[in-house]
Amino acid sequence: MTSNTPPIHQPRPSLLFFHAHPDDEAIFTGGTIALLTDLGVGVTVVIATDDHHVGPIGAETRRLEAESAATGLKVDRLVFLGYPDSGLAGEPAPGSFAATPTEEAADRLAAVAREVEATAIVAYDSGGIYGHPDHLAVHRVGTSAARLAEVPTVYQTTVDREHLHFVATHLVGRAVESLTRSSADGKLAGGSPTVLIDITIDVASVLDRKRAAMAAHISQIPPDSEAMLLDDATFAAVYGNEWYVRSGPPTVLDQLNTS
Image 1 (cartoon, rainbow, N blue to C red):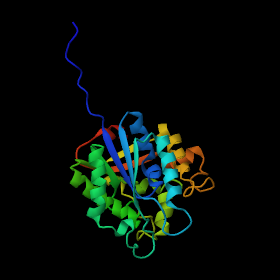
Image 2 (tube, rainbow, N blue to C red):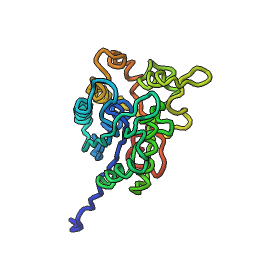
Image 3 (cartoon, rainbow, N blue to C red):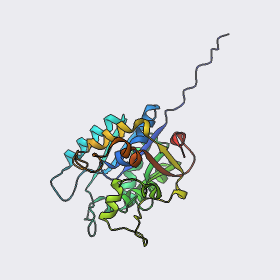
C-alpha cells in the first residue's frame, strides 16, 4: 500500500569555517571541507583578512587565490571580512584584524552564521594553532560569534603536535619557528597534545583536492616551496590528517572522525 504522507525534508546541514588568512582554509581544513561537501553538507568559508600590510601581494590576488581553492573544494560560499593582516612583529596596527574589538568582528561573523543557518562554527584553538595574532583573534571572534548567533557547536581547528614531531615539517612548524615559540625542551609548541584532541579526520581520499587547494594559493605556497615539493607519501604523512577539539553537541563533522 502506498502512503500518502509526504516525505519529511530534513534541513541541509550547514557548517561555517572561519579562518584568519587565505590559505589557512586549505592547509588546516581543506580535506574536511572536501569530505563534507561530497556528503552534500553546505560549507561557508569566512576569511578575516585578505591582504598583507607589508609587501607587494594585495587583496585582489589573495581573494582570487582563495576563490580558486574554494571552487576545488566545492565551497558554497566564500566571505571576506576584509581586515588588514596584523603581521607578526610588534603591536598590530590600528584597524588590523587583531586590533579590532572582538565584539565588532563577532557581530559580523554572527550575521553570516545566521544567514546560512550554521549548525556549527569552526575556528581555532585557544593558542591560535601557532600564536599568530590573527589566529588568536579567530579563536576569540569565532567563539563569541557562536554565542551571539546561538550556534550550539564550536570546533577548534588544531594540529596534533606529537604527530607532527614524527613527520616532515608541516607549514605550521615553519610558522612556529618564525614566531620563536618553542617549549623548554626545544620542541615546537604549536597545536595541541594528542590527549586533548577530540576528532581526527583521515583525509587521504581527498588529499589530491586538498593539495590542489593549497597550491591555488601560489603567492603563499609557490610550486618550489617545501610543502609542494613533498612526494605523495610524505605529503600524506604531513597533511593527511586534520584535527579538532569540539565544544557542544556532535554534528555531521563528527561522522568523519577516524580516531
